[in-house]
Amino acid sequence: MLDSSAYNKLVLWLDSRNVHGNQTRLSNGNQLQTWVDMSSKDNHLEQLVSANRPLYYSSNITFDGTNDFLENLSLNK
Image 1 (cartoon, rainbow, N blue to C red):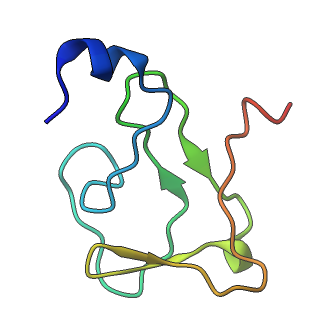
Image 2 (tube, rainbow, N blue to C red; image 1 turned 180 degrees about the vertical axis):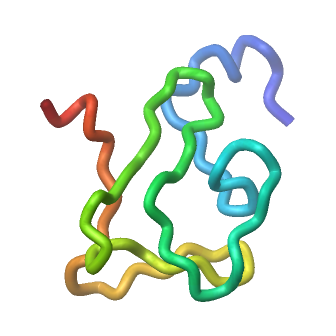
C-alpha cells in the first residue's frame, strides 16, 4: 500500500482489475476503449479506433503487437 505522500505524487495509476475505476469487470475478449487513471489526476488512456483497441482477458490487457495502443488524448492535443 502507498502512504498518502507517495499517492499524491502519482501521475498515472492503472489497475487491470479495475479498468473503469468503478469495480465493474469486463468480459473476456472485450475491447478496452478507456482505461481510467486511478491517481485522481484524470490521465485516462483511450483508443477511439475500434481496430486499435487492446483486448481484456482475466485481468490482463492484451495488445496485438501491431496496431493496438492507448493514449491520453488531452495530453496529445
